[in-house]
Image 1 (tube, rainbow, N blue to C red):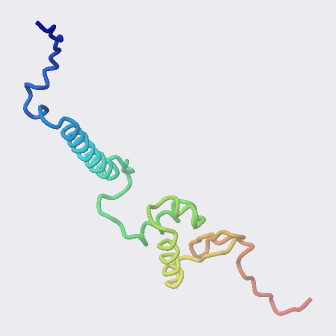
Image 2: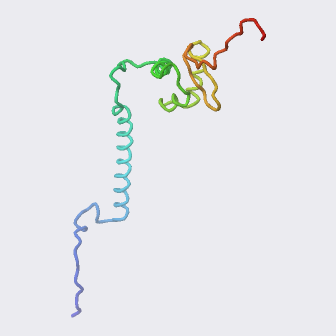
Length: 141
């Protein structure tokens, strides 16, 4: 008689899904779980951006236009704000902010002053005193 080798049962042979090519099946399951998990995270993140943003008490429930939002920020900051601060406060590109400010300036709703490498956005009449042109009173002394 030939000695028989002891056999160890893993239990996998009784599960039809894993009885065949286990490597392929495991990879397919892992990929499916990974893809579904990624989709779930993206959906949750997108929903979270909208719902987790705290609303200010004085903020209206109706949406405001981009122009109104910039003019409101300007009023809240004493009539003056740097263009970079506007860009940092909104979820718009620098180009969009620049275009919007150019429209507001053309309509006379704001003035843009160049301060070195930055723009200072002001409500008309709120510009720094040094930036206002002061015509002389006729004498050339």
